Length: 424
Image (cartoon, rainbow, N blue to C red):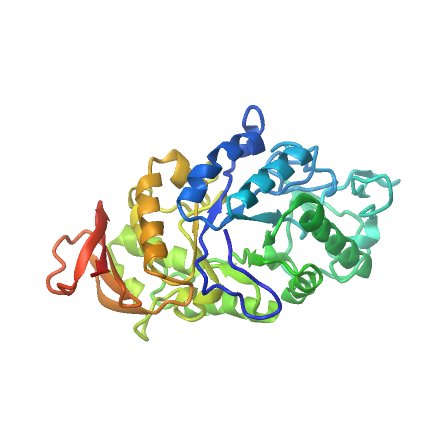
């Protein structure tokens, strides 16, 4: 799920709650992932979900979809066929849920080699020449690595405007043909396939000015960028208390894109899981007394999450501690920002009821991306915060919260090391 965007600040004051509709193993599902996921739509809709983030839809050199090649060829996706995807999206729409496409455009895999044996001849997946590119559409400084082998794809385009991606040729997004044909493809995903918005994969890989251009050309109802940079760490190996620079990188990206996009709040994820792992919940209050992540400064543009297919699932590149996942959801589902629920946690971990209780509390009390937080306690073993003075959330191992919670608030839900109260 994701927020609404146009060429003005996103309209996130309506309730927005996202679910990722896949994990790293979904492409291997017997019978096809689209056909499997469609059966879960009633449960997703009943939990107050407004947006579903779907996997990359195109032909790809990797089954998960993140090494795309023939972009228009949706029938070659390991998740299912183009018709199955359209049927899935139509069913989501009939249940009031918008669909967000995973847009992988930083890099692209070639269809065949040139006369010098370099992989730089692209095929778009249509009978005509749309997206049929060559070396001129690859960044001149592109380098592709596979194990210990480094290859040059022979790119003759402009220098890369962002971070390098080693797994496939980096596309020159300053090339006007690239801009035009990728915009056309994304608009086709909207009009023909039915997608409502975008999740920009590896958005660090090209300038935010480029993202701004694609936003303007395609005008999605929602867009979120993946800007995954490491936190700053101290000599003790722990994240530093002050991560202001980290969250400001996310904010600067959003501002550069035009303010209508959102960004995954990696700052909040990193601080939240460090605080819970170390028993240092004082980390959840910054030096100004507010939330220390992006939600503390630009909540309407911050998509909060506990894990996704990269950080968790079978990749486990930066997993949230499994025994503290529900405390993570208590935080993101009661606090400002746009919360995103991971497929595995909702469907595979037996947490659907607990998570749904929290989404219902959020909806019932009108908690929004822009809601205000008043932190009532931030001790090593106890964090308590009032949100809009309508609900109070508690996480941490300390059971006794003393007189922090007024008598006018009653318990709405509770579990292992967490509780949420509603004002009566």
